[in-house]
Each structure stands twice: as C-alpha cells, then as structure tokens.
Length: 598
Image (cartoon, rainbow, N blue to C red; front, side):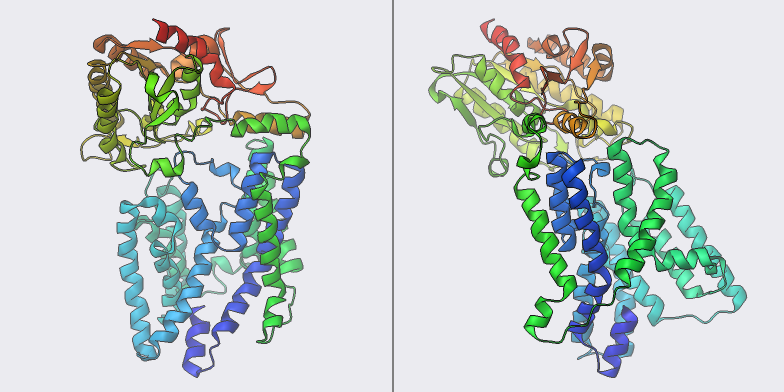
C-alpha cells in the first residue's frame, strides 16, 4: 500500500477515492460472503444467544468496527474466544482503519515535506510507534491489543520495507530469509496468552516478516508452489480458518477436528479466491448513484442490516421451536430491579432498594453473584411490608483495600463507602455478603477455560503482578477485616461459592435441542464442587468464626443428592454458567428465610 500511495503522490496522480474503492473491492466481497454464509448457517444450527451474538459480530465486521466491539466485550462477562465466530476480524478492522487514515496523512504531509523527508517521517514514526506500543501494552493491554494506536507501527514497518529496500547478494538474501523464518518460528514458542501483547515481543514475528520481504528471494524456502499458492489464497484462508475452528468447538468434534479443519481452511480459501476475490466488479464513476450501487458497498449495507436485525431481535427469537425458546429465555431471567445497570455502575455505590425502603430487613453486598441472589433474599421476607437493600457492582467483591486490573481503584474506593452507608442507615440489619472470590484469584471468569493459566485480577498494595499465594493471603486478611468491621454493627452472613457449570446452561440446553433433539444436561458432583472451592470454603468458614458471622451454604439445596444440578424439571437454574437465574435462586429462599429468622 505504501508503494501505491508514494508512487501516486510522487507522480501527482494519486486518487484518494480510487484508493478506497480498490481496497473495498479487495477486502469487502469475500468478507461479506463469509458473514452472510454464517448468518444463514446460524439460522439453522445455533441457539438464540449464539445467533444474536453472531448478528452483532457480522454487522461490526463488515463495517470494520469489530475491534471496538470486541474490546468492549473483553471484560468480566466476556464470552470465550471459541464461541466468537468472527473474532479474527478485529485485525481486518484495524487494517481498514489504518488505510483510511494513512493516505490522508501522506497527502497532507506531502504539501509540506519532500518525498525523501516523508520517508524519514515514516521510519521515525515506525520506531516511535514500536516503543509507544510497549507503553500502551502495559498501561492498558486490552486496548493495545485491539486498537490502532498500538498496532499502526506493525503496518508502517511494511512501508519501511518498500521505502528502504536493501541490495543483497544471493547468499546474504538466503541468510536474511532463514533468520526471518527463525524469528517467526521462535515467536510460536516464546509468545503465549499469559504474556502482555503486543508489547516488545511483537518485534519477533514482525521483524521476521520484514527480513523475508527484504530478502526478496523468489527461489528461496518460500518460493515453492505450495507457499506461493498459500500466499495467493492467504486472505480467503484467513477469513475462513477461524470460523472453522469455532465450528469444531461448537459441534464438539474434539481435537481431531484439527486434521480436518486445516485442509478445509485451504479448500474454502481456494474456493473463495476463485469465486469471490477474482470476480471483476465494474469500477464506479464518481456519480453518487454509481457509488451507492457499487456491489462491495451494497454488500456492506445488506449484511450490516441483516446482522443488526438478528441482534436486535435476540437471534430472531420467534423462529425457534417452542422448547428452545423456553430454555433460552432463561438467559434473560435475571434480577429485574436494575440494581447493576450500566448507569448504576458509573454512579457511586448506588444503594438499590427493593420493596419497602422504610422497613429494610436485609442488606446484600457484593458483586454480580450477590446481585443474582438478591431477589431470593427478598422472597424470604414479607414482601408486602418489608424490603431489601442491595449494594452490588459487577466485578467488585466486598473486600476492603482490594484493587483490580478490571476496574482499577473503583472497588477500593467504594467498599468503605458501602460499609459506612449500611452502618449509618441500617445498623442492626442482617448483612449478606456474596462474591465470586475464586474467579478473582484465578483470573478465569469462564469456567470452561479452567485450564488457562491466568494472573489474579485483584491485588493489594502497588504490586499488580503479585504471586498467587501473596494475593490469597491478601484476600484472607481483607475478608477478615471487612467482615469484622461489618459485624461491629450488623449481623453478617457469608454465602459460600455458588456451584459453577462448565458451560452456559441455557445455551448448552438449547444447542442440545437444536442439534440432537434433547437437552444437554450438565451437572457437577458435590465432591468436585468442594474440591474446586476448598480454598474459598475454608477461608469463609475461618473468617466467619473469627468475626462472629454465620455461613450460608448454597450447596445444601443445589447439591442435596450429592450432585450439583444445573436444571430442574427441564428448566435451567442459571442464566449463564455461574449466575443463578430468577428461577434457580428460588432454591435458596429457605436458606435465607431460616438465616434471617435466626
């Protein structure tokens, strides 16, 4: 692209609109066909929640905004990567955003700088961009991963390869090519999901590609027919490879799918290249009508509208069989009182009263797990004459002094305010504390990803990379201080961990009905639940004993037969994999009623 822009600017014949139209012709048709294909596939084979998300991904992908959308999703309730059919299009969005801005910057600067100085500017910006990327990665790794400001240098490096070509002998070129390949191979071993990315290690694959380009060896290791054809079909292979990965995971085809998925990616790339990429669209003139009817742009509108409709209608919910609708509806059967809305999340501690505000009989403190059981506490009261106060916030455990890599110092600031509000306004009222502590310690919020090695997301003091044992001790001390402080003026009840399933329960059951004609029922043995939560259970029990608090055990009703159930009478007990739905949390009502009576 740098060659096209600089050559055009140098000759005075560069057309910005023509550049954009050529990029649209190159990128959009194959992407739009993939998105449309997935929308058709999803209609028949994915459940409502999956299809709803697919619609959102399709619309954001063809409009090249998927990197922003995925960044917003990358939080506490983030969906696992293997459920995101178009996850890979974030990089295409970054590339498109770059090529919107890049030629404009070159055109503007060419009015003031010679081409030789422009070359120096590109080189300098690339070097500065690399070091800024390191800073951005440590400052905000999620934004650095998905957004252009930390990625632009990688594409500028390709421009540097064109602007500063090197003349090498065949022997030197062979050496450069091998070093470049070695750097790319090394990156496969040295780079993992546990490391901040892109950061400094991004230099390995990018510099490897840079050296291969500079070597320019048509008869080298990469000069064979296989690699040449792979390069020719690479864009279409890139488009199809990730949806095929997700397909294997979605269908449960196991690790052997790898041996089918890889050659199938090449086959689909070959078909896409010859059927879609090579199709010759007539270049539009500059009239509005011609531009509006330009097929690549029309395809953006069509897929964007279809994807948006799918998203807005919750996966076109009405087209599913009634049994699927009944099961999938539990996705939305959450606390209806809006105590944890986005507006509330940005508005301090946001005391949320349910029922009679002037006769509060229970207080619920904690994170989203506390929010999920709040209505069960309310059900345990005389709803006509009594009320509940809930002070809950997503990803905010009730721990004094705790800081978080998810939301910074919000919890550390607000937790003392929660305690002060309760003690000033509701002294003597029972307080129920519930938090998903083990997830903050493990850094894993999707139970199906328990094999992932992750860093704790909470910490104490200034070391946000403290080791696990240090953070555990911090949690132990903080929980004891929190509960003992609350116990000075209020009876306190600690809720042991809610049993967690491996997959989203409504999603899994709905998928079972669609693909197999019967629900896929999940369960967890009581022994496994106790083993998995041993640390948290012992910590909660220890703190309760030290502070004179009481313990409430959700395993009593949820695992009373030695198995922790995920559904009852064909209906999910959870709205995802770990939060009880309004239907499920009713099983806890007798526990809360007994606790509050005592």
